[in-house]
Image 1 (cartoon, rainbow, N blue to C red):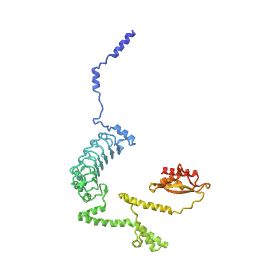
Image 2 (image 1 turned 90 degrees about the vertical axis):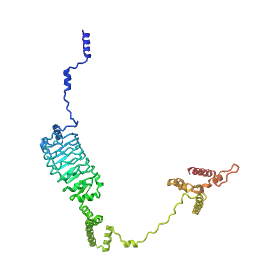
Image 3 (image 1 turned 180 degrees about the vertical axis):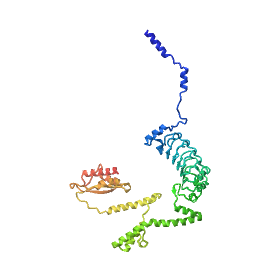
Image 4 (image 1 turned 90 degrees about the horizontal axis):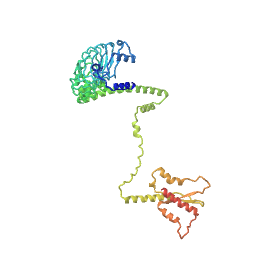
Length: 450
């Protein structure tokens, strides 16, 4: 019996499972919750959790700021309860449309830069909107902004604007004062007329467009066209710049140069006035101390950097520098070099012979010192190795004094021949045998070192 039971159970386990029609229908109709664009959803639960993490109000209408940037959202949604928003940050998401902002009637600032927006739309109900940032998007035309009565700043850098038709809507925006259209593809010189018709424009940024190269005298033209312009591209427009531009328009370059000089004179006086006040106080202080008027004026000239012209004229000229003989060229013939070297050798020999030497004493020992050629001395170390060791004086008083005998390199062979005795003749020398052997060894060592 147990064996039959085990076999039956094993057979049942090996039988494949049969799928019933009911099971098939259940698997086919299971709903899958997915976003069509595969972006994270801006749900109400997520926004409340986000407000809690950033210590914002849990009651939606009490929040005036929401920081929803760098979240990867694909669309704007579920903001109906946040009716008190005044600033909304949606930077660096994947938003493709401006939508679902009908309940944010108090909104002042909208930041949608670095998204995928391709059109400006659905903003007519934001009557209090002051600043909108749509930089780094895919906008090809400026539109739907004239119905915003309080719009002050518009940022559209790094978009797809190209022609005058793409930006001519700016003429209808009467309240705009700050416009950033940098790094687009605007190249038509007629775009300058669009900005000249904007009454309240004060700041314009057109850097990165071909327009700057196509318009002749671009900065002067923009300054003349926009009467209230205070900042153009990367630097401000000062009153002096505007006055010079007006002079240039009337009289050309020469009139502009004269106008600039008229502005520089009072500016220089205004900048040097504090220095003059300090000099005035210093003059009275030195006068109270009893300094003479000449000394005070001289010190003031030194402080101003002024020099005495009379003193310079009467000053003695420095003595002229001695002419240094230039080295001989390497391209000269070998005969001339040899002729020049021979008198130098004679001079060296005469200078050595002219040196006053002491007469040898009875107990002195002569050690031959080889005079090497000077061209072998390349550095201080080579000089010390050649001359330093033999010139050190003996510190012990018991040792006998040693004299150096200068021997030329050419005479070494002759000296060794004279020192070595012949086989037939014995060596005749006043020195003992030990001194003779030391002289031969020292000369050989010096030759090896050289």
